[in-house]
Image (tube, rainbow over all chains, first blue to last red; front, top):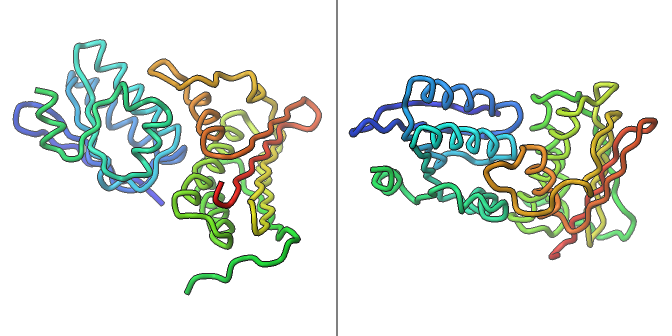
Length: 114
Length: 143
């Protein structure tokens, strides 16, 4: 079990974090490091692609919440790409659907940041 | 081939002890999911159980299980799965933590406890300095 983290710059200066695998107490520090590095580099509009994430727990949610709080301090935002019903359910029951933009595809998430 | 579902009324008991370290939580998650798959849980329910056991183990790790291990007991009957998670650490009883939906300011610990409560049908938490912490979670088949 592991998480793969890939960061790329999309047209328009938005950065996309592609995550593949499972985000839990063991793997979430790797995700946190990637998001923190982007924010430390003054990149405040982020799309985090959870399309290939099979599992996320509260530590993973905490990393995403922490990233969102930091970018908002700079007028930025974090949008998520997620279609996995189980993961969407977790965002729903925790109420996090109200604070994250959650989109079915990357173009939608990018457009909403523009 | 799908495993035969449980037919006996007596609970089948599976015990597992893992080191209280982050890299072992996935083992607990997968083992408990395998036990749950012996019952007639839906795939969604099994995912709920996986997340609940992981949150319980994560909570134990983050509060320093004193002897460095987490004990997990799974009692499976045809109608429900009872999961007991024990460690030697002491922490805030779950009842004292927020039950509201967690917003931006929510701590991860509260989020984990909230998820356990939301995903399982019954949750009991006891914690004291002598015996550590015990969390009992029950998921009913079709519940």
